[in-house]
Image (tube, rainbow, N blue to C red; front, side):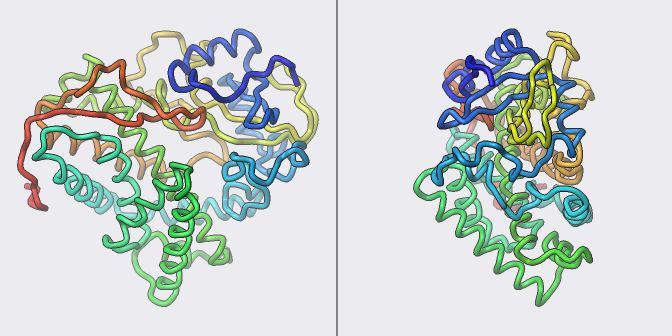
Length: 407
């Protein structure tokens, strides 16, 4: 691997990722050598066509992490082990026919969720969250709203009671925070999921967990629990960031001003533009080369790790001209991945309903909403993996809480 590899860390992923990806592409081409924590080497795939090739060939570019040629160099406390683990039992690391069966089980369970009921759940929880701030005239739409909404809706679809929701919110956000409470959050989520599985084994209901347990493919409760936890974590943070990034765009870009004062057509356009320009999931680990090959002008050795540069591929000038209009229906972005390991289509649809409903409730409930700080002062989470705001302070005319009485 090249000696001028780029460290996949630092403030530029927070402050100017688009420029950073352009510089990487200019120096190295469509595939860039990078260094992970501890100077662990990997490749970051920046090119749209190259990313399509990697994600579309699960034999050459496998999801089997056992292939990695760096395992001997990875310490037991390596900070990225939760993301790039070995022998993990979830769908993320299964391959071949068993993966296809597992993906089908998840997709079928999610697809059977009632769309109308999903929107009603999202609207109800969103209203409850807005009720807690509507009379104050100010709010942080990240910490007090976006980071609390998706998991409440997902928990309800799974089959959890509303009373279980706040504890699951805390557990997920503790896990995302990655500090001293991360393990406690993971333990709470695992225990809660195990209790729900046992309850639904005894008394099935019309929910995602019951449908997965009824699947005839023969997955164990442990495998199903792992997949449920992966789905909840993968559905919560990116959807929260999709809400936050879209609201930021609408509050700072004059093209979307009409939506802030009664219009709604631009909400979907803002959400789509975010998936192209400011996607919540920026980079993903990963794929492993099953044999020596060439990609983007570089020699890739068997066992090399390739990271999927979703945002960089979305902005690849070879396939998308600079300044192209992204507010229409063009959804050929990589924000949900591609190939057999992409985010399942029903999961994409659920995330879109939660995010759009969450945004629309904000615009409905908070009249004359505006930023409470200069736009340039809005801070991003310092991460090369997930891109979202740390806070979104707004001000508005105080209004009474609905108290569950939405007309």
